[in-house]
Image (cartoon, rainbow, N blue to C red):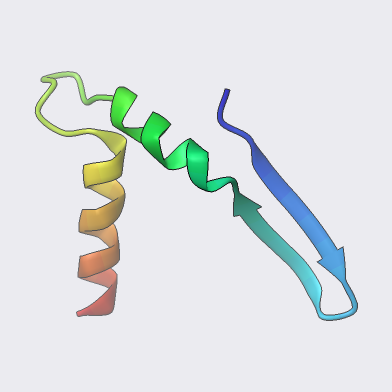
Length: 50
């Protein structure tokens, strides 16, 4: 199961996840099975950076 972890400290709230959860993102596919969640997140990150 994919878990998102919440951490708090004096600097504020931080959201993170375990690195072993990255491999699980490839199991979630689009309805046409051409794109995984990992592909989508990478595509969004590239678009955000440019």
